[in-house]
Image 1 (tube, rainbow, N blue to C red):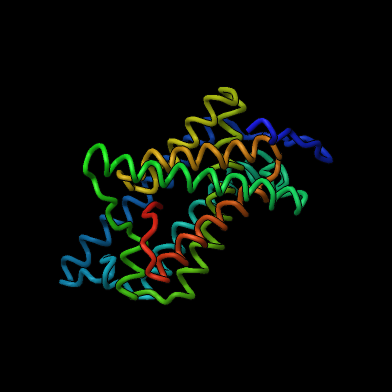
Image 2: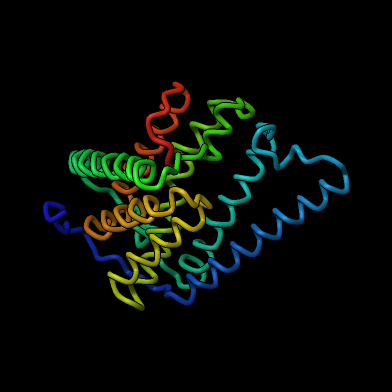
Length: 251
């Protein structure tokens, strides 16, 4: 990745929040989401209605509610710790303009790298260990058509990449880098990115994808290239799923 050189920006990112803010934010989001999931599951069990949390039967409304809660929590903790508590600016999270031409070029290079790595990983898992790629949660939603394609496309290729990049790269990576340096921040933020996706088979590829997104953010000092790359990758995958072309089963 030597061709991805650091770019000069109008002003440096001013990271006023720190790793301890990030760890508290992570713990808070995790606790709330786990509480909501198990609390809802228990309540629905008492009401004898499991369909609200069932991937194969979940409705547009329940999917939107559950994902909406996650989005509000992730953006909420970023706003509280970085903007409200530490008095940072949104541009310090990386929300600043970056060259469109360079964004497209870097995204093309990294997309090719990601798909090559993903293909080789799936091939090796099957050839060496006889392990087939299982269906992902998103693939199950697409196959069962329990959530409309418009909502899936909106969430996966637009809302998801924006919120996840603000949270994982703009907030988490920057905080870890401030306290522990670039290399540790790259590893820990990528590891966390893989963990939250709850996909054991794709755990290693997700770490690599998270690392590449953080690396891109580190070199450009803008979230826009990372958001575009994340969105393009997700869009390609969901279009493959919607087209019923089972080429790669990752993410």
